[in-house]
Image 1 (cartoon, rainbow, N blue to C red):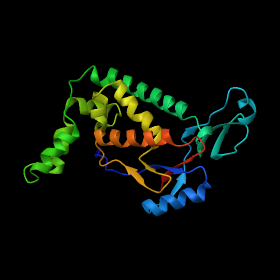
Image 2: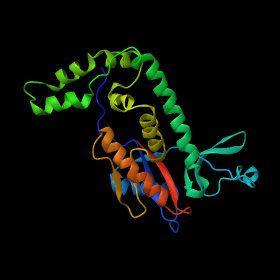
Image 3: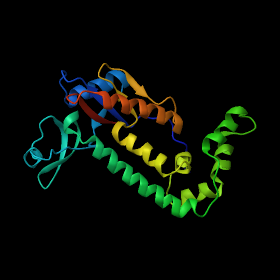
Length: 229
């Protein structure tokens, strides 16, 4: 049975000031200090290749961390200097993949079912009167809706129903932000940026704040994506 997702941290973006040394050990130390968790580097960023000298620099991993190559050229990295990471390309590819998922949902689910109430609506009923509506009953009411059943049948996450029903641009907008940030961000001075809850609205608020922070970082600042074990 599908269960509502809790507010969990799977991927953290760790930021370093230009003057700080960045390697895997430094990133893991920051994650341990702030979240008391262990993790491993995860390749999430496309690597930027400049138009004129990119034919040469694409083969060198300087200022990059935990890279992956294709035909000898570096294509992905877990992190590195901001100027070497193709953040725009990373976001664009994530938005494209999300748009394809949304169109599949629109064709197979939205076109054949009526709009459904979200899990948050039923969860609110449970919190309002737990004795009258148990958590199991709230989940049963949510999942018996035709649109939710169709999503389960076609392997779409029904707990993403609000963002699916909000439209293609909103769905793609969520996922390109997630591609850049993950589930949390640790700033250069050790602050933790995190969504207040797993609701779509709170996730957008957090991701907008984190993206703005990332955008304002100096081009020589360094990033590292860490997957929490």
